[in-house]
Length: 352
Image (cartoon, rainbow, N blue to C red; front, side, top):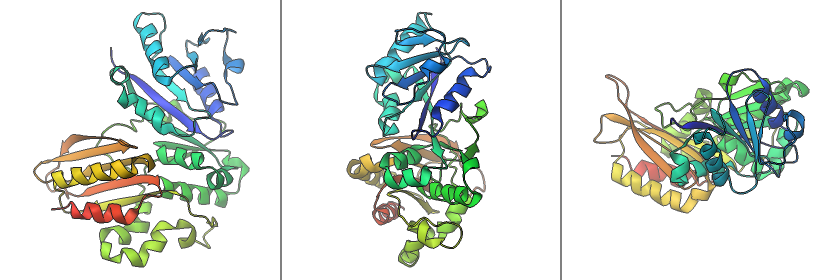
């Protein structure tokens, strides 16, 4: 049986997760989707779209989708669904997990890698985060969970942009980009997202693509390429709120979820890099939300791709470097109050 793709849907209360889910579930796209809901959520989709008033854990919907609520543990729920699918009792093509009320998508994502049975059945496709343009500034200021959800995202959907002025949306997008430069952002209206923007995004694939907004790098280039200049420009790199005052970006706060990029044209020494990454993951793992890199390693003609969530890290050999292609390494780290200098200097020392 081929792996069942899974999508994690996260976002703050009122950001429109339920609207998006309803849209995905009721659209006639011919896909049979199993939705796993965390039942502690204040908003419940069951009453609105479920056809049967069933006391069972798993409910069939009119268009062949199914809905189930986590009573126990996500792992058990996923195993139960897979077992029912194998026995022909349930038919579904993919799973969407709505993490209402779950502060941190990290443990949900880790479930797909920690447990062999789950890893052999499901493929984690991506983490989608919904951000409510009207309330985002306040939520991001006040709630660490909201900031973490942004840091984890593979794709960010911004809802309710019609309720705020354009410069507010621009400032929000700018802020989100500094928190997480690897997640594309898209404004959505009333959960109307084309299905291709939601599924099969391969955000968790170990692929040779590392999408970082080029403007983000331009902003920060001077700070990363030559570390001796780091201190001159440090303020501007780290504090988007100060660097861009007077450009419609009036947020005078400093998010604890931040990202930074490391780039180098020199090759890495594999053993030194492995030791260093092992050490930082050991110390800072709980604060490292997402990290990814496409690396130029000494001794191999192929790109090395690595990525991680918290303490969980994996790497893989990617495609060969093309003839004439500039061999360089590019890494992005997204985390909570990570010591940028320690990371950048440490990585520098792992180069040949």
